[in-house]
Length: 564
Image 1 (tube, rainbow, N blue to C red):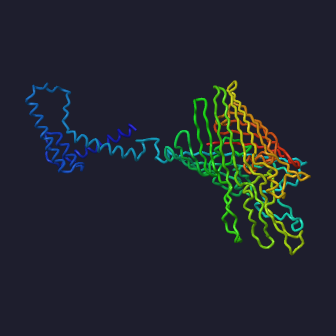
Image 2 (cartoon, helix red, strand yellow):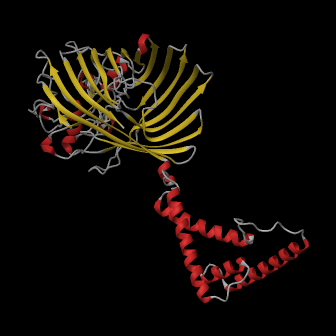
Image 3 (cartoon, rainbow, N blue to C red):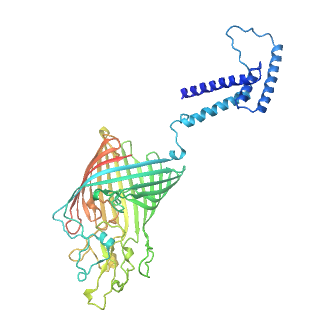
């Protein structure tokens, strides 16, 4: 930068010399006063107007006269000697104007060449940050040859239905899950990219997009192939956050999971639609209390046009959640964290319809909207429609097109406990216990709600095979749990047990038992840092049914993960 300023100063000097020569050729004879000569030079170069110059000349002459009078009355000055330099007096106003002119020219060139303020950006750029991750996965799904081959895909039935369950009027099978044919070496991709904007000291907003084979809320993984066709991009997050204090933040939109939880209940890819207030109150450097209060619309009653004058009542489905917990640093090597949550899934259970007559032209029944918007598998289900018999045909010949709904209510207690400890040689050990109990599980209420028309989870005597409990115990050991640097590593193992109606099957991990409930088994694996922000993973998950027909599924996943 100094070399640029020196070159500019040299250029200014050359210009002044040229202008001085030009002025000497055209201006009146030079004055003995150097200041007057400089003022005339500025006039000839266009820097000063003539009237301004005249005023400055008068001021300079007056000051020069005063200086001569002062000098004549003062004691004799020391006579000039060889090598002395005489510096003429220049008024302050002229000095300031020359300084301002040069400064403006220097700053103009500095801004144009971007060397006055290096490494600076516009204000908006300093308030925006980006994040993203990529995961390439090779996945194999291995099924036991002894599995039953009669597992209905009720989620697909609801999507494509209604399905006629009367075997006398419909000879086709409903959608059936694959339970015996392996799927090996499926190449799958997850790509996510987000933008976060700090709008002010207390407001921020963010957007994240991600891949996904469909609109499933529990996975953003895209299976590759499909004839090299382009892949879908979905809005994964979009939120606004207000932080009125260091202890409280309120977020709304499509937001990250605001609760302390595990994938036993909520998939790691699951985002929540709605509002959440999150607080954190430190009592000391070692102990703090935290909590979350949230309300999330699961599904609104559709207002789409249908070929019927009778419309469904507005019975929107909501999830309300309240969690409180504590984070305690016992000492420099041990940390304990725990939280207890209550989740109420309001109106998520199905409803048996009033009598309806699809055979006479009814386009829908009044309980069709109570079917779950998304399911995986495992929950106890029942037939939603109460279809009356057609009196004009034999009783066995009345079609019975059906949807299915959840038989149980879901009001969950969720307990999470973690313990982290530092071991020898920079080793770390982390353990996690998660227990879920469904307070809404009541078999007598399920029978009343369904009128006995269950679609699954019955034994040969017609008794419900289900339960209200789920739990998971896991542990991880390594030199890092974050996997940010080359050489970081850890290994992990755990066990899950999930009864059919312990929790809604639509929101938990989509990998263990390929999603849902009515599953138990173990998982093991490890991570290793190949480079900074790049790590490899291997994971083996082995599961089987808790109740019912045999259904064993093993899953192997080999991954390359990156974060930026």
